[in-house]
Length: 286
Image (cartoon, rainbow, N blue to C red; front, side):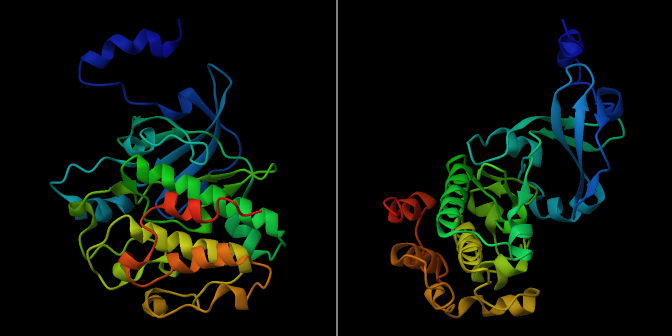
Protein backbone atom coordinates (compact mmCIF):
# COMPACT_ATOMS: atom_id res chain seq x y z
CA UNK A 1 0.00 0.00 0.00
CA UNK A 2 1.50 3.36 -1.03
CA UNK A 3 1.34 6.72 0.74
CA UNK A 4 -1.57 8.05 -1.31
CA UNK A 5 -3.63 4.93 -0.48
CA UNK A 6 -2.98 5.46 3.22
CA UNK A 7 -4.12 9.07 2.94
CA UNK A 8 -7.28 8.24 0.99
CA UNK A 9 -9.57 8.29 4.07
CA UNK A 10 -8.67 11.97 4.58
CA UNK A 11 -10.43 12.88 1.34
CA UNK A 12 -13.78 12.68 3.11
CA UNK A 13 -12.69 15.22 5.76
CA UNK A 14 -12.22 18.59 4.11
CA UNK A 15 -10.88 17.43 0.77
CA UNK A 16 -7.50 16.04 -0.29
CA UNK A 17 -4.37 16.88 1.70
CA UNK A 18 -2.24 19.71 0.36
CA UNK A 19 0.91 18.65 -1.42
CA UNK A 20 4.37 19.23 0.02
CA UNK A 21 5.91 19.38 -3.44
CA UNK A 22 9.56 18.74 -2.63
CA UNK A 23 8.80 15.96 -0.17
CA UNK A 24 7.10 13.96 -2.90
CA UNK A 25 9.21 15.01 -5.91
CA UNK A 26 12.86 15.53 -6.74
CA UNK A 27 13.56 18.30 -9.28
CA UNK A 28 15.72 17.19 -12.22
CA UNK A 29 17.46 20.37 -13.25
CA UNK A 30 16.40 23.98 -12.93
CA UNK A 31 12.81 25.08 -13.26
CA UNK A 32 11.64 26.92 -16.37
CA UNK A 33 9.91 30.22 -15.71
CA UNK A 34 6.94 30.83 -17.98
CA UNK A 35 4.62 33.79 -18.34
CA UNK A 36 2.30 32.66 -15.55
CA UNK A 37 3.94 29.59 -14.02
CA UNK A 38 7.09 27.62 -13.28
CA UNK A 39 7.66 24.21 -14.80
CA UNK A 40 9.88 21.41 -13.55
CA UNK A 41 10.97 18.01 -14.75
CA UNK A 42 10.62 15.90 -11.61
CA UNK A 43 11.05 12.36 -10.33
CA UNK A 44 8.45 11.03 -7.91
CA UNK A 45 10.48 9.72 -4.96
CA UNK A 46 8.16 6.84 -4.16
CA UNK A 47 7.69 5.41 -7.66
CA UNK A 48 10.72 6.75 -9.54
CA UNK A 49 8.42 7.94 -12.35
CA UNK A 50 9.26 11.06 -14.35
CA UNK A 51 6.64 13.79 -14.67
CA UNK A 52 6.23 17.41 -15.65
CA UNK A 53 5.21 19.57 -12.67
CA UNK A 54 3.57 22.92 -13.35
CA UNK A 55 3.23 25.47 -10.55
CA UNK A 56 0.96 28.34 -11.64
CA UNK A 57 1.64 31.78 -10.16
CA UNK A 58 -1.53 32.76 -8.31
CA UNK A 59 -0.67 36.47 -8.34
CA UNK A 60 -0.32 36.52 -12.12
CA UNK A 61 -3.41 34.38 -12.64
CA UNK A 62 -5.66 36.51 -10.43
CA UNK A 63 -6.44 39.26 -13.00
CA UNK A 64 -7.33 36.64 -15.62
CA UNK A 65 -9.51 34.59 -13.30
CA UNK A 66 -11.27 37.77 -12.13
CA UNK A 67 -12.79 38.12 -15.59
CA UNK A 68 -14.89 35.04 -14.92
CA UNK A 69 -16.15 35.95 -11.46
CA UNK A 70 -19.40 34.18 -10.68
CA UNK A 71 -19.11 31.73 -13.60
CA UNK A 72 -17.51 28.86 -11.67
CA UNK A 73 -14.71 28.56 -14.18
CA UNK A 74 -12.71 25.32 -13.79
CA UNK A 75 -9.02 25.77 -13.06
CA UNK A 76 -6.30 24.72 -15.48
CA UNK A 77 -5.80 21.38 -13.76
CA UNK A 78 -9.51 20.54 -13.91
CA UNK A 79 -9.61 21.38 -17.61
CA UNK A 80 -6.53 19.31 -18.37
CA UNK A 81 -7.98 16.29 -16.58
CA UNK A 82 -10.98 16.35 -18.93
CA UNK A 83 -8.99 16.45 -22.17
CA UNK A 84 -7.62 13.11 -23.37
CA UNK A 85 -6.06 12.39 -26.74
CA UNK A 86 -2.92 11.28 -28.55
CA UNK A 87 -1.94 14.82 -29.52
CA UNK A 88 -2.70 16.46 -26.17
CA UNK A 89 -0.56 16.36 -23.02
CA UNK A 90 -1.91 14.00 -20.36
CA UNK A 91 -2.73 15.60 -17.00
CA UNK A 92 -2.51 13.05 -14.16
CA UNK A 93 -3.62 15.09 -11.17
CA UNK A 94 -3.95 18.59 -9.79
CA UNK A 95 -4.56 20.22 -6.45
CA UNK A 96 -3.24 22.63 -3.84
CA UNK A 97 0.27 22.87 -2.48
CA UNK A 98 1.21 23.30 1.15
CA UNK A 99 1.93 27.01 0.54
CA UNK A 100 -1.55 27.61 -0.88
CA UNK A 101 -0.68 27.53 -4.57
CA UNK A 102 -1.81 25.19 -7.33
CA UNK A 103 0.03 22.28 -8.87
CA UNK A 104 -0.58 20.35 -12.08
CA UNK A 105 1.09 16.99 -12.67
CA UNK A 106 1.47 16.03 -16.33
CA UNK A 107 3.49 13.84 -18.64
CA UNK A 108 6.94 15.27 -19.18
CA UNK A 109 7.23 16.12 -22.86
CA UNK A 110 10.67 15.39 -24.27
CA UNK A 111 11.50 17.10 -27.55
CA UNK A 112 11.77 20.58 -29.03
CA UNK A 113 9.15 23.29 -29.28
CA UNK A 114 7.84 23.80 -32.80
CA UNK A 115 8.46 27.50 -32.13
CA UNK A 116 12.19 26.85 -31.73
CA UNK A 117 12.36 24.81 -34.94
CA UNK A 118 10.79 27.72 -36.79
CA UNK A 119 12.87 30.37 -35.05
CA UNK A 120 16.10 28.55 -35.88
CA UNK A 121 15.06 28.22 -39.50
CA UNK A 122 15.61 24.47 -39.37
CA UNK A 123 14.20 22.99 -42.59
CA UNK A 124 11.13 20.79 -42.46
CA UNK A 125 10.35 18.59 -45.44
CA UNK A 126 6.91 18.79 -47.01
CA UNK A 127 5.86 15.42 -45.49
CA UNK A 128 7.03 16.66 -42.07
CA UNK A 129 5.06 19.90 -42.40
CA UNK A 130 1.92 18.04 -43.46
CA UNK A 131 2.31 15.57 -40.58
CA UNK A 132 2.73 18.36 -38.03
CA UNK A 133 -0.29 20.31 -39.29
CA UNK A 134 -2.43 17.17 -39.23
CA UNK A 135 -1.44 16.38 -35.65
CA UNK A 136 -2.05 19.92 -34.43
CA UNK A 137 -5.50 19.77 -36.05
CA UNK A 138 -6.20 16.50 -34.26
CA UNK A 139 -5.03 17.90 -30.92
CA UNK A 140 -7.22 20.98 -31.24
CA UNK A 141 -10.18 18.84 -32.29
CA UNK A 142 -9.68 16.85 -29.07
CA UNK A 143 -9.81 20.06 -27.01
CA UNK A 144 -13.02 21.17 -28.72
CA UNK A 145 -14.67 17.77 -28.41
CA UNK A 146 -13.99 17.90 -24.66
CA UNK A 147 -15.99 21.15 -24.53
CA UNK A 148 -13.21 23.72 -24.22
CA UNK A 149 -11.62 26.56 -26.18
CA UNK A 150 -7.82 26.60 -25.90
CA UNK A 151 -7.35 30.35 -26.56
CA UNK A 152 -3.57 30.17 -27.15
CA UNK A 153 -2.86 27.94 -30.14
CA UNK A 154 0.63 28.85 -31.32
CA UNK A 155 3.98 27.10 -31.98
CA UNK A 156 5.15 27.85 -28.41
CA UNK A 157 2.53 25.41 -27.13
CA UNK A 158 3.45 22.55 -29.44
CA UNK A 159 6.14 19.99 -28.60
CA UNK A 160 7.74 17.92 -31.38
CA UNK A 161 9.59 14.76 -30.31
CA UNK A 162 12.33 12.85 -32.11
CA UNK A 163 9.82 10.52 -33.75
CA UNK A 164 7.79 13.35 -35.26
CA UNK A 165 4.95 13.23 -32.73
CA UNK A 166 3.36 16.58 -31.89
CA UNK A 167 1.75 17.30 -28.51
CA UNK A 168 -0.42 20.30 -27.70
CA UNK A 169 -0.10 21.62 -24.14
CA UNK A 170 -0.79 24.59 -21.83
CA UNK A 171 -4.42 25.08 -20.82
CA UNK A 172 -3.66 28.16 -18.73
CA UNK A 173 -5.97 30.38 -20.80
CA UNK A 174 -8.52 27.71 -21.73
CA UNK A 175 -12.20 28.18 -20.95
CA UNK A 176 -15.40 26.17 -21.37
CA UNK A 177 -16.93 26.45 -24.85
CA UNK A 178 -19.86 28.53 -23.64
CA UNK A 179 -20.87 32.13 -24.54
CA UNK A 180 -20.48 33.56 -21.01
CA UNK A 181 -16.81 32.55 -21.00
CA UNK A 182 -16.21 34.06 -24.44
CA UNK A 183 -17.76 37.48 -24.01
CA UNK A 184 -16.23 40.57 -25.65
CA UNK A 185 -13.24 42.15 -23.97
CA UNK A 186 -11.02 39.19 -23.12
CA UNK A 187 -7.89 39.65 -25.23
CA UNK A 188 -5.86 36.90 -23.57
CA UNK A 189 -3.52 35.01 -25.85
CA UNK A 190 -0.56 35.63 -28.14
CA UNK A 191 -1.21 38.67 -30.39
CA UNK A 192 0.43 37.25 -33.54
CA UNK A 193 -2.11 34.41 -33.52
CA UNK A 194 -5.24 36.22 -32.29
CA UNK A 195 -8.47 36.14 -34.26
CA UNK A 196 -9.96 39.47 -35.40
CA UNK A 197 -12.98 39.05 -33.15
CA UNK A 198 -10.66 38.80 -30.13
CA UNK A 199 -8.59 41.81 -31.17
CA UNK A 200 -11.74 43.85 -31.88
CA UNK A 201 -13.31 42.76 -28.55
CA UNK A 202 -16.32 40.99 -30.03
CA UNK A 203 -18.24 37.94 -28.90
CA UNK A 204 -16.31 34.83 -29.89
CA UNK A 205 -16.53 31.06 -29.91
CA UNK A 206 -14.27 28.07 -30.59
CA UNK A 207 -13.60 29.38 -34.10
CA UNK A 208 -11.10 31.81 -32.57
CA UNK A 209 -8.93 28.71 -32.10
CA UNK A 210 -9.44 27.78 -35.74
CA UNK A 211 -8.05 31.15 -36.79
CA UNK A 212 -5.05 30.75 -34.45
CA UNK A 213 -4.53 27.27 -35.86
CA UNK A 214 -4.57 28.75 -39.37
CA UNK A 215 -1.82 31.23 -38.46
CA UNK A 216 0.19 28.42 -36.86
CA UNK A 217 -0.24 26.09 -39.86
CA UNK A 218 0.70 28.92 -42.24
CA UNK A 219 3.90 29.57 -40.29
CA UNK A 220 4.78 25.87 -40.11
CA UNK A 221 4.32 25.45 -43.85
CA UNK A 222 6.20 28.50 -45.09
CA UNK A 223 8.29 29.71 -42.15
CA UNK A 224 6.59 33.10 -42.03
CA UNK A 225 3.62 34.67 -40.29
CA UNK A 226 0.71 35.68 -42.57
CA UNK A 227 0.97 39.28 -41.29
CA UNK A 228 3.96 41.17 -39.83
CA UNK A 229 4.39 40.12 -36.22
CA UNK A 230 4.38 42.26 -33.12
CA UNK A 231 1.86 43.25 -30.50
CA UNK A 232 -1.84 44.04 -30.43
CA UNK A 233 -1.44 47.05 -32.74
CA UNK A 234 0.05 44.92 -35.53
CA UNK A 235 -2.62 42.28 -34.93
CA UNK A 236 -5.28 44.78 -36.02
CA UNK A 237 -4.29 43.75 -39.56
CA UNK A 238 -5.71 40.27 -38.99
CA UNK A 239 -9.04 41.25 -40.50
CA UNK A 240 -7.37 42.00 -43.85
CA UNK A 241 -6.66 39.20 -46.36
CA UNK A 242 -3.38 37.37 -45.80
CA UNK A 243 -0.97 36.76 -48.69
CA UNK A 244 -1.73 33.41 -50.30
CA UNK A 245 0.55 30.82 -48.76
CA UNK A 246 1.44 29.45 -52.21
CA UNK A 247 3.30 32.69 -52.93
CA UNK A 248 5.63 31.94 -50.02
CA UNK A 249 5.89 28.15 -50.29
CA UNK A 250 5.43 26.91 -53.84
CA UNK A 251 5.51 23.24 -52.80
CA UNK A 252 2.33 23.44 -50.71
CA UNK A 253 -0.41 21.30 -52.31
CA UNK A 254 -3.47 23.29 -53.35
CA UNK A 255 -5.79 21.32 -51.09
CA UNK A 256 -3.70 22.11 -48.01
CA UNK A 257 -3.20 25.73 -49.05
CA UNK A 258 -6.94 26.25 -49.54
CA UNK A 259 -7.74 24.66 -46.18
CA UNK A 260 -5.22 26.85 -44.32
CA UNK A 261 -6.33 30.04 -46.05
CA UNK A 262 -9.95 29.26 -45.16
CA UNK A 263 -8.99 29.22 -41.47
CA UNK A 264 -7.58 32.75 -41.83
CA UNK A 265 -10.80 34.39 -42.99
CA UNK A 266 -11.75 37.42 -40.93
CA UNK A 267 -15.37 36.39 -40.39
CA UNK A 268 -15.83 33.31 -38.19
CA UNK A 269 -18.77 32.14 -40.33
CA UNK A 270 -16.43 31.92 -43.32
CA UNK A 271 -13.94 29.62 -41.58
CA UNK A 272 -14.27 25.84 -41.24
CA UNK A 273 -16.83 25.14 -38.55
CA UNK A 274 -14.64 22.55 -36.85
CA UNK A 275 -11.18 21.03 -36.94
CA UNK A 276 -12.81 17.80 -38.11
CA UNK A 277 -13.94 19.68 -41.22
CA UNK A 278 -10.38 20.94 -41.78
CA UNK A 279 -8.97 17.43 -41.38
CA UNK A 280 -11.45 16.03 -43.89
CA UNK A 281 -10.26 18.57 -46.46
CA UNK A 282 -6.70 17.25 -46.29
CA UNK A 283 -7.51 13.60 -45.50
CA UNK A 284 -6.27 12.22 -48.83
CA UNK A 285 -3.27 14.47 -49.08
CA UNK A 286 -0.05 12.55 -49.71
